[in-house]
Image (cartoon, rainbow, N blue to C red; front, side):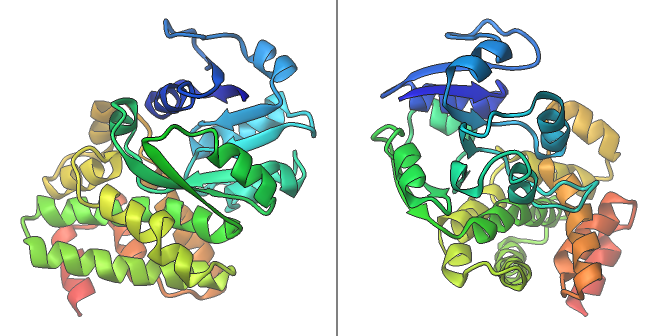
Length: 295
């Protein structure tokens, strides 16, 4: 395949490395980077039918409104999050610009660093168009085992929600609450994620699979996770702005927690862990949050 990648952050570059094993892959971003096959956005949009978009979730809507996409483009969305300003899921945002059958979403446990090192993992390509899902799935190299699914909303919610639970997990470890507490938190986080997702039609098997449990276990248990590091820093009393500045990258869970709380309140969905994460991000003492959760 001839594939264009939009977004040359760590994840975009990792996907470029992976997809280049079997395909001709070009990449672009807002600022020019000295990396192989870097080109302009104009060139990609004019010459590539298949696009992988790895932009932060919070800039996606604005980027699409500014640049647009021809409706014949076939897109694999490699972002995970919920637009906090509109409260919309990414699939709802993309569907304003492309037919549903031209959109797919990549989910599953995938640290950029390990993908770029060629270490094995398994991912899911989710689309209402199974032919498109298979096309993108087959583009990945042998060290990435791919599955396909038609549960777009379930996969998208799982990929977004796990970042919020990862912040909670980082807080848990930062407070030195122990392995038992972290395991309990992740298990209840998975239940909470599924409860939220099923409200919107997500399937249980999605939340118990790679997109849900797989990505959650990864993101909520490693210092390689930006969201985990945010939580760890908060537990140590660091200011959120300083934590994010030190990261130098986007931690989607910070914004997704607010989006989840707004959606949960509107639809009366019980989300106790996300609620405490949101309140800690806005200044609540983590020890008081722990007490409230245990109650």
